[in-house]
Amino acid sequence: MPSGAEWFIVLLVVLLIFGGSQLPKMSRNLGRAQQELKKGFAEANKEAEAEAGEDSTK
Image (cartoon, rainbow, N blue to C red; front, side):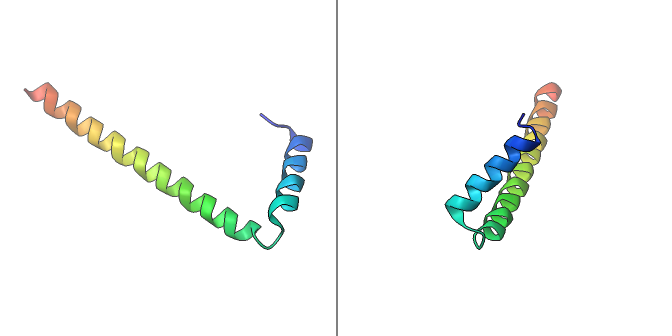
């Protein structure tokens, strides 16, 4: 896991590549993607549990 100084360097590189105006938009998109990923995992777990319940009743 990167330490504080390494995160600072990564942030500087991202700023240089994308510019300050794009960072809020990118952060928003990353947050939305993370939410969708969590929803997908929760849905997959729910379906797997439902299938496991059906298999045990047969």
